Length: 340
Image 1 (cartoon, rainbow, N blue to C red):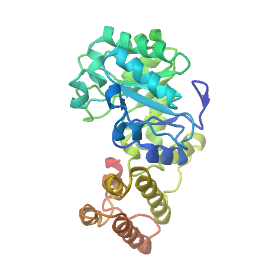
Image 2 (tube, rainbow, N blue to C red):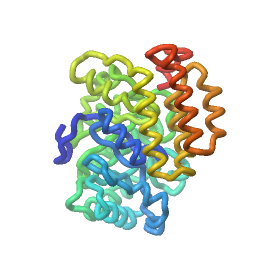
Image 3 (cartoon, rainbow, N blue to C red):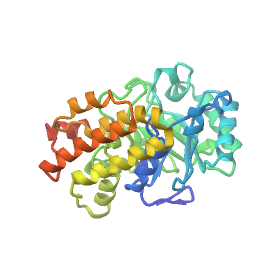
């Protein structure tokens, strides 16, 4: 796929997720089939550029191109400064966050809260585009502030007029948070009204759902977030299905164990042992969600404090599943699929 002058392997995008889409996760998703992965958001507050958390979020060493960095904020000048800073430090695409529904973001009128103020949206987009004339700028937003104010079509037109090169739309309003089901009619409407690439996001958790959303909305690609947590091979499953119409067989226990092991090793190396062990807990929880015996395993896992203890426990758990069957055994497969 040709996207903003970059040749991507496909039209599958990893959604930016705070505390999740760090470099190890982005690299893993790209390795397993994603065409592009957007970083977790970096603050536009220049006072925080020196923090360890911000430096990690802006760390791209060894990552497959293109490097897309998301910035968040509500002040046009600060957003422009953040765009320049990240472009100067390796970002090849700047993405603007107007989709995050979190209170700590919206309370400072950033993220999806900005959709209430269309004139300010225009000022921010114009400032960022002007700040990095040689770097494409993209925008992620929601269908609206609430269900009575689905103004995504107006935001999309403002974006296109401001020089935004592509947009991604989550099929929920800010008020919806992540509740209920995503709707795609608004995304389809936006796609019919703009001439820049549109990426559809929200509840895309199977290859069949990806095919449906692409066909229904006419979108140029799909963006996947929560469904890939603990299941990064979802990207290759979707890639294969879109290319062939055939479903890939589920990964075997041995491969999932190997993927998890590699992911944990990268997390420990990226964060250091103490923080790495803490960050790894949520990923291990996602990898084991719904598996027989996983509740007791996760409870015990959360008490472990060292890399060695964590790896030994993960090995024991997955080897136990491998000894019983080549496929993972879920307590309720239908329930597990819905939870994805």
